[in-house]
Image (cartoon, rainbow, N blue to C red; front, side, top):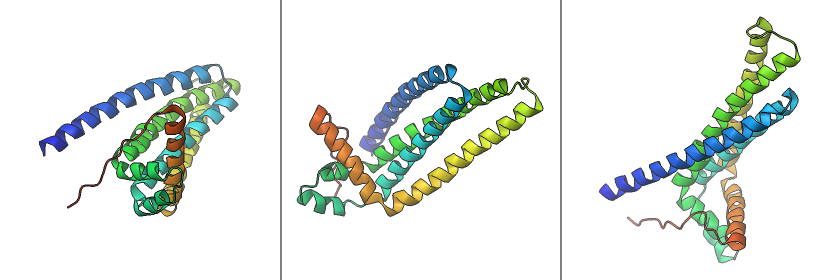
Length: 196
């Protein structure tokens, strides 16, 4: 019990530090890009951030929905990425936490901040005064569209993740395989299932 708690605290602190670093990095990058961009490019950046959040949410769900058995069959046939897929499924708690909570939540926060930049730039381009009714209307419409895209996209992504979890995780495994072979970096360690 103590070992589980200690392991959980260690993982929580580690993921909190990773989140802090990634959030700061994403925030600096998106802010610096948006400052020099017009409202159209800004809209495309917001869309890209939203899509990134949807994509990683789908990966996280797929890892929890996937079954380990098909990957063993693929690994026996020497399918590239199958062994890495097994590791993703075995570490689904960590993998989904990183994808859904870290990348997904950061994307949501950054897309909100980026939306505020775009709304301000759009109001300036349309010569609306700050705090005017027109700026308020633009703000409501743009924020609503971003929220609808995020929620609708994540709903679609969840459906795809549940129905095509094996295929999705195999593709993730292939990426992990490439990184391991090319750069000799192991992204996830093997965690064998405990027998009852």
